[in-house]
Amino acid sequence: MGKETILIVDDEQDILELLNYNLGRDGYKVLSAQTGEEALDTASRELPGLIILDLMLPGIDGLEVCKRLKKASETEKIPIIMLTAKGEEADIVTGLELGADDYITKPFSPKVVIARVRAVLRRKTTEIPEQSAVITIHDI
Image 1: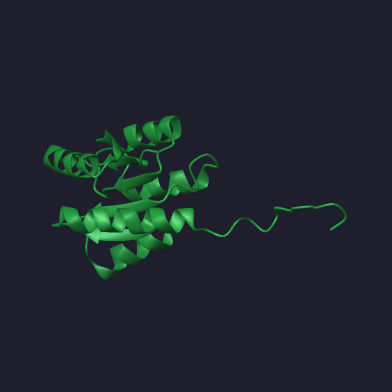
Image 2 (image 1 turned 90 degrees about the vertical axis):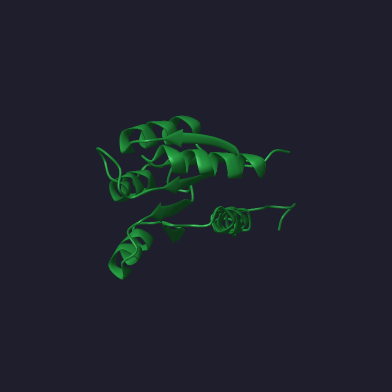
């Protein structure tokens, strides 16, 4: 079975190429978007397994993209890793409070990004099933 599809959202072509190459080499299918609008469209159409999201995007910024993805029922459970040059404590706290699963500041190591992608996806697959799920066996 293949690995997850990852959507990379960044307006810097060099970063898209670097992450595309490294994640692709690690077996992931990679999609990319360079604007917030494109990210929202691609995420709702493709439903990737994870999104790597820059905050400083043309048009709709990354924080607003994160808010909208977490509000929409079809994309609310997609894990998001913010990858941005905004490294102030307030930026990190805001990103995590809006629903990001991890926050990485630029400059970054591709190996660290891949390790964090693996960790977030590992947490996603080991989540506890919803309490509303009921299993009935005979009269039990």
